[in-house]
Image 1 (cartoon, one colour):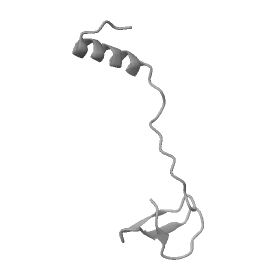
Image 2 (spheres, rainbow, N blue to C red):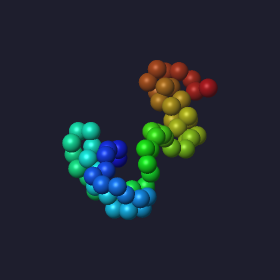
Image 3 (tube, rainbow, N blue to C red):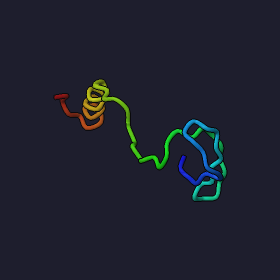
Length: 64
C-alpha cells in the first residue's frame, strides 16, 4: 500500500499510512518509496495445451 506516514518510522516498525484517497491503514513498514512490479506468476505449460484444445473445440480446428 502506498501513502504518507503519519509520523517518522524505520523499516520494520508498525506505522499508520494515509493514502491518496484519504483512507487510513496500519501495518508494518517494509519498504520506502516502493516501485510497482506486477507479476502474473510462473509460466504454466499446461495452459498452452488447454488453449489449443479450446480453440479446436470452439473453431473446429485441428490442434497443432
